Image 1 (cartoon, rainbow over the protein chains, first blue to last red):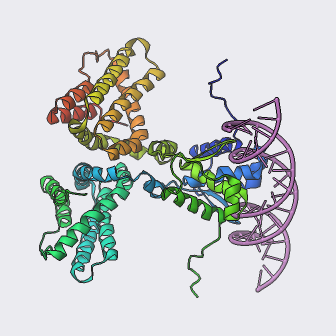
Image 2 (tube, rainbow over the protein chains, first blue to last red):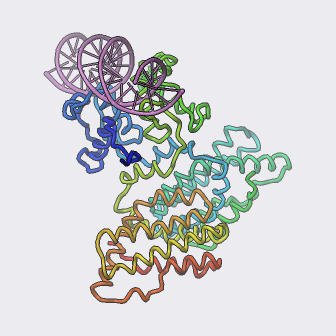
Image 3 (cartoon, rainbow over the protein chains, first blue to last red):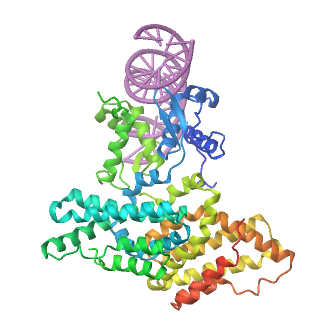
Length: 243
Length: 243
DNA sequence: ATTAATTTGTTCGTATGTATA
DNA sequence: ATATACATACGAACAAATTAA
């Protein structure tokens, strides 16, 4: 007798979970729609109400439903970003930091190239705004440098690159950026901290440096592939040593 | 009084969930380790056992723990792939199919380029194997073409590109591929079906075509960037019309 | 503005199936 | 084979939040 065969255990709440997941997948339960109450479901499935609750908890965990106390449970529009935000700390690792360098030099450049073809005027303006935001925050460094300002700079930096993803009008690139967001955040934090320390200690005047974000903006606007590529390369090459 | 302020609701199971999530994040509960039993946790938290179970269900849903009947609940190594597999159908959309074309022309090429620098001998051999697998399956088409063989071909195609991701030794690229896997699958399915139909009806002898996967393999092996790029471009340009 | 009905949140108690020593 | 620890599932009950009469 093959005792190493997978025995199909009951696991009631698992079955209920799969059923409800399929109901959402097949649009039987549509987005923003209220699903049947827990008692209704427990009756129609012929299981205990708490078993239903188990399944609903699981659905809520992956962002498929949202349940409101005293009201009911509603099907939620799936958000890739929300899910990644929730779990990114669990796949974050030091090796990923090393991978960010290659990511920026390849995927981000490709993304910017797509942005040249697909971006709208409004999106370009928004990008310019974000670049100016960044520059303005940078100017505050000599006077009021602290951890808070450092984080603000990193966030503004990320916002710029996220905007380029949006401008590519390719959802996959936006998703990739979300996946890489956590490592990029840590990467930028290390780099920026080091650069600012050098700046303040050795009294190098960095304000005179042409801000490369601005160059990225201009080259996308002017559809200048080569200048854009070089801007990105300078951006990452200026700070190769992560460790 | 600011009544629009976010009121911190109780939501016991939510709090327990957050606590346990942090315990895993901070390596207080390590991977493969058994967490305290439900009764123990319910006692130390001062809540009911079922409330603990709610939280455990949520942790299980995002792949942080695995619970074995009659044994206990164990912390699991987080798997990005498993999570994406579970939810990819929920972010899959027709627009994503259009994005696959640009993905292959940019990210995959960049990935292959990294593979030239980082791939090991064993990985190259494995890639050759997968290419041969694909070619062999392709030769079966004229005699025994059906839905099953079509899916087999698509899966073997995907396996090749996944191997290139592995060879890049950049985890981010592997993650990206996982995210794009579902759209790529549908994309390839449509394209291959159309190509095979043309092949069989118009009796074009496609077996004589040089398989481009083989070219990708050779160019990675020989570190021939230009040939590699052209192979990818031919691969996607040969079938631009998705719809 | 109050009340009543509905729905989710939480608890207790109990019984059962499973794995391990 | 037995005992123990543990997760699974059920039923009943009450608390708390929301909605509508």
